[in-house]
View 1 (cartoon, one colour):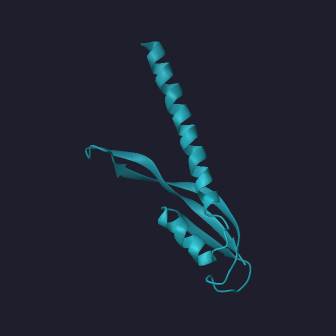
View 2 (cartoon, rainbow, N blue to C red):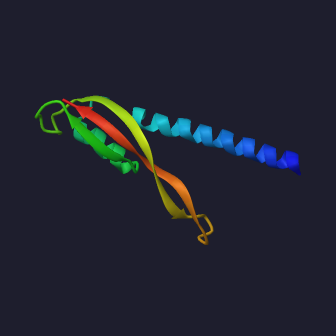
Length: 101
């Protein structure tokens, strides 16, 4: 039984690391792609992220260019599990910093 617990813990840790790597790739996918800053911000927010915009000028977001996208801390919230009988703490998004000019 002791080996089963160790195997379960290792498997859970590996799954956690894999999920973290996938989560880190998401903001990069929404990085500059020729769209306006407003489009990039809207896409990030639609994925459940909270976006903080750092302006490097006074250009309107519709005309602004995205300079960089950086991931901040994860947003963790209690949500109902699949059976609907228990609340579990899950990462529901991330804080994302978007630099525009």
